[in-house]
Length: 413
Image 1 (tube, rainbow, N blue to C red):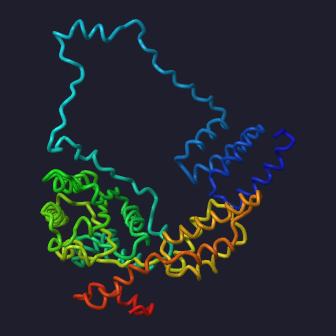
Image 2: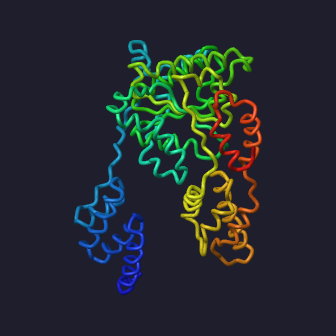
Image 3: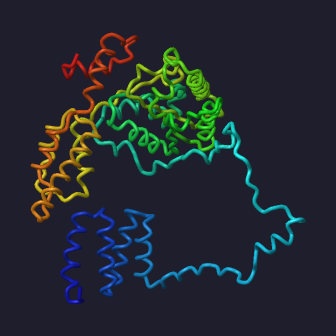
């Protein structure tokens, strides 16, 4: 684009930035155009605002430095290899006097040479994810705050009322409803590291290694405290021992019970345990005794505000026009978060195929989204069919009262 064509483009971009002030890439594009037009002061201003929204953005920092007249960094020169030196000949000459530089150790047959220390587990930083990023689901947030977060945030009040932090939290409900995302949000609220563990991470073919892996999970969390240990698919890690024919699985459950019993000890200060399952009735009863995973929260398919947030998220980078989210939210009641993502994907596919056939690119419209929504069968329905029997005949001690209330409200019980 020539110099004469830049001012109108800059003016248009300024209007776009004013409409979306938090759009960092758009603001940086405007700053680059200003810099190219020798308007360095204005480019510095735009880059500074971008850095307020994204302090660690490398492109914003680089653009700010260039706008302020800093010279570009010199490219790093790779070290030059020493020419003319024959390492192989040198090793042959001193082979009798100097031990070899590398030794290939044989792999142990029992698998104990596998790494199981702190570096063997991926401890994640949840970053800026908070419960406010979870759309809707206010009941779940309130339960989390009352049972878990409020006592942690207020140690003096916790001590005054004698509120114990012993035990963990079990999230249960149909698949695809955001239990893992909620666990990450809790870690973000606590400012804690996040360690996600599944059955594939723990189980090992060698006797004793599965229990050792389970112990190392908690040892890693203790070293990385504050840390949230998230036990995904707890029904696989902690299945009822009465139904488990393999002694190795029973030993894994025993080891998990042992680690949970240490949650209140000084060595486990700052270790918080969350677990998730689709079938809590298949979890060993001992895991749900007081002091272990004794608090449960039902995570249901997203409500209206949550569905709107999910749809908006999955459509944010797609070309859409005249999409009425209000109507879409109404007709997608009962769909899980995964179902809603599939609706958006299917609508995009319809528009893409239509564009290919007509050789004319078009936007994703309401017609595509409605057609995709009508074709999706709620994936949570089979789960509710199983849960209904549990709520009716196996609700010992009111363990599933929340589920019973929901089923009665939806007239499914």
